[in-house]
Image 1 (tube, rainbow, N blue to C red):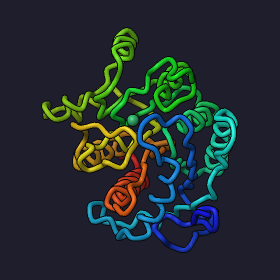
Image 2 (image 1 turned 180 degrees about the vertical axis):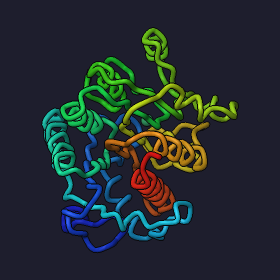
Image 3 (image 1 turned 180 degrees about the horizontal axis):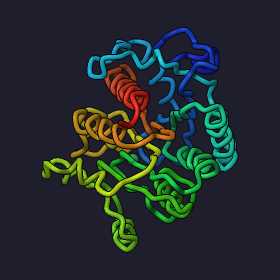
Length: 292
Ligand SMILES: [Mn+2]
């Protein structure tokens, strides 16, 4: 029995705060069905929660302790059975957070969980928000290995829902995906551009207005600082680039919800779990700080 099954680990290792005073609710969703290469994404939520208990809760960049704002950790979503049924349960969990006025924070699991979250977001907000994706992959395949609902098709499904999607850290896709996004007039911020263009951050958010949903695929980070993922890719975002992007996004836009997906912990190597936990904590702190 995993720790998540035996008890709820809270984010930051603090006593579970009173739900009514929390600004965010973490929804562990350890779905792992369509992973194609390295396995282990189902262990991502537990690894992030465990690592978070060892973080300094004071964020020296923000000058605050975001955990003081109230981060509630829900019991994990049941991710057994058919993917559609799992997505229904994730959607319901996200909707409950939105109804309660809390920020929904979904922890995957594979990237497919985002579809459930986005269905809840669309149900509440319509299509008046943009999906901002940190990811090595475009995830724009029409289907993958015969599946319409897969980690490799997530953003294609999002665009079919009528949602606007923008990427940072992109550096892996098929020719068909590249041609599809070009036809759609979509312009991913390729990782090589973030390294070459001093104005990449402005370009990444150029013309963007209104609220956003953040989907943080941990493989958007460079494989040197994040090898613990199913399909690690070289040439990705540095810690500084990823956090600068989060800072700019959160300073300019209301964040309606977020997810962090695809951490596949490596046995005995806690650095990557810790990196994911700190990135999530920084994101929460920046969101709590709010758009200026
Ligand atoms: Mn990815």
